[in-house]
Length: 375
Image 1 (cartoon, helix red, strand yellow):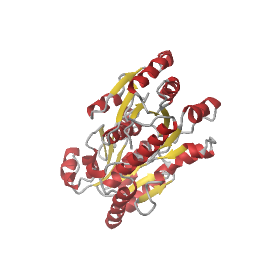
Image 2 (cartoon, rainbow, N blue to C red):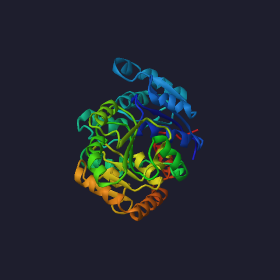
Image 3 (cartoon, helix red, strand yellow):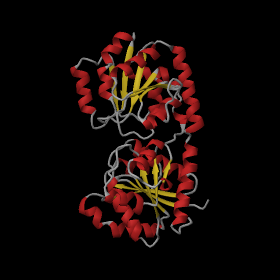
Image 4 (cartoon, rainbow, N blue to C red):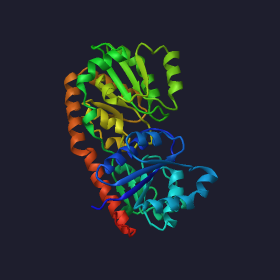
């Protein structure tokens, strides 16, 4: 296909699954010859992260009056770039960038990407944003697409599910296990239950900490490792200290070496209670050959196959969560079988190349529909 000029906009200042997907997609499509860049918030993590991997990134003031008044200037910038497609990701940048695209002479297509399963307002303005200002809505799971059709009444033909995919190469690191456990101060014979995520209120860390003592009593030598940082980090660290859980629970803070961290685990937990698309952390854990115990949110259930690659439990159900962990802790053969099935599932269904193929198709079709054909 012809090379496209693709502009991703993002108003979020944080760094999590949504922002990671934007940068990984940009790198992947640039590798296929497309001109892809990011327009993000001043001081936002995505700006430097994009630049670190040679993705051009520009700062923009999205919020408040400055954002609204910048619409004509952004339209001019899209014209100077000869943008074919504008992909918006959060609410504020979606409004500003979509309106800018509509007044730009270059007539770029607008793709609204929806990452979270949080309910979208059914109000008339939000409907206009999604179904009139946007040419296509891309969701990061089939469950999110289905909800927007059934709950919001959006036209099915305007919605495309392109679940998050990963390159599994950096996550299957059995060679790193000994060193990773040593760095964490964990013995080689310990049973390690781990999780990786931004520390947000809905990620289920309180459920995990609440189960720590009972798991300690039921599983000899158990250690719980929480990788990540975020808005709940200080509170969770205080809880570990106040409840005397430091002998069982290790909180690493933010880590870049996720493959090495996963190599230290025997089992991966993902007890999130809301808002998930297809979680990259779950795909990474499956790539590492780990069985997964995760909440049965619809988007997670698209990845984790019950009793095949792991176990699903009702969100917030502490008894079911702990029971499945104890079951797997006592059955090494089952863990190995589920871990191998998880690796195979990622290779078959969630490889990065498949996501990029689909996105090229969606973006190319959207650009053609707006009278843009690429360079």
